[in-house]
Length: 70
Image 1 (tube, rainbow, N blue to C red):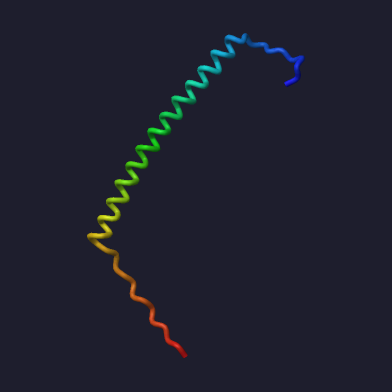
Image 2 (cartoon, one colour; image 1 turned 90 degrees about the horizontal axis):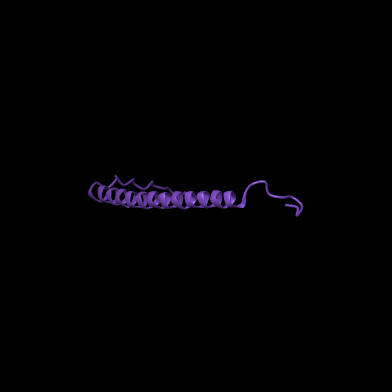
């Protein structure tokens, strides 16, 4: 920004606006971090359930294809 351009907004208003935006971003980040932790917990539980089901009811193994050599 050129040096000859002056601000049209009061510095105190700018400061208050920046602080409000900063606090909103911090709060949003905390909420996203909490959601990530919840998703990770749910994913681990689902992974455990999948592994348990696969252990108790293993998928049918595919028979290897026979190859003939000529």
